[in-house]
Amino acid sequence: MVNSRVEAPTVAVMGSGGGTAGRSCAGCGGRIADRFLLFSMERYWHTRCLKCSCCHAQLGEYSSTCYSKGGMILCKNDYIRLFGHSGACSACGQSIPASEMVMRAQGSVYHLKCFTCATCRNRLVPGDRFHYVNGTIFCEHDRPGGGLLGGHSTPLQGNNIMSDQKVC
Image 1 (cartoon, rainbow, N blue to C red):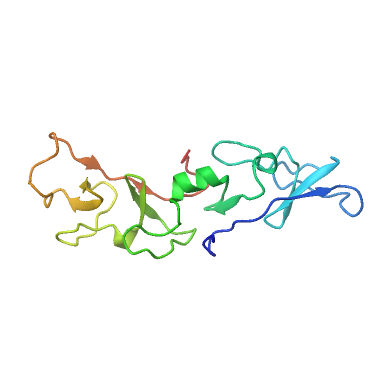
Image 2: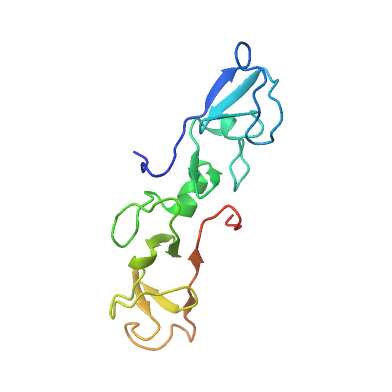
């Protein structure tokens, strides 16, 4: 169902009575003394601290599932928005590991090695200009019909989804 290289942990709500005294919250580091706590990704959380890294929705209230990729904790909607529906490369269909840099175009996600011009097969890198025509990628020189669309080409954006980079 979910790519095995992407954590899709279940959020378990637990009563704090019996055996959970002295637990530290993975979110804030504080002692958990609340009546209820969450257990997700092999760590304990205050119910208020397990939040989506992008939209800040409290995941214990929002859903029973959260996603972890590239150092971020995500709700399902933000995971899909950032990594696509399947977590797979739009060119080759293979899964994209959580630590791998990706290229994005028009909502599609690609391995770096798969982000190539359909005509000349040259790999495009951040800073290169490209054209995205009917779901196909072309380098600046190989666009069908020649010339630039309206005099402008699309600047290439690379995404290295890391915790120190703002992606939301």
